[in-house]
Image 1: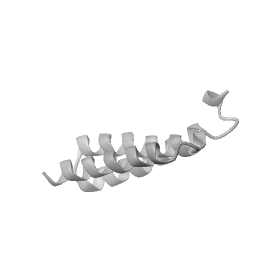
Image 2: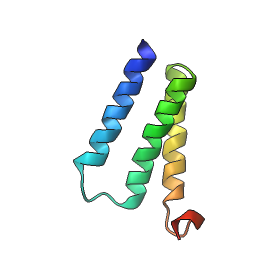
Image 3: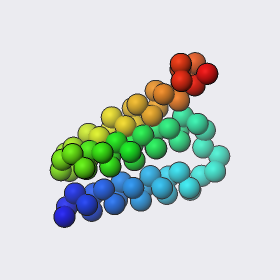
Image 4: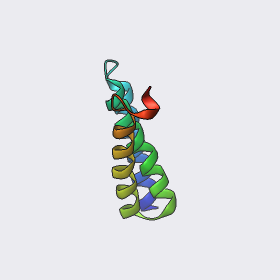
Amino acid sequence: MNTKIVSAAVLAASLLGLGGCATMDRQTVGTVGGAAVGGLVGSAIGGTGATILGAGAGALVGNQMTKPGHTLNK
């Protein structure tokens, strides 16, 4: 039950972050989107700790993948 609440909070925060500012750059969108996906995956795998770690890892990956000059960004 507690994990579902955390998952819902992470999803809601990420949607507010994505929809709240139309002028966000690509890297910010990648970071927030990565955190949302990572948080949901972490929630599915484990408890609150896994959700937090998943969100952090997702944010890092999303941020790095959208940096200028990244292989997938060309």
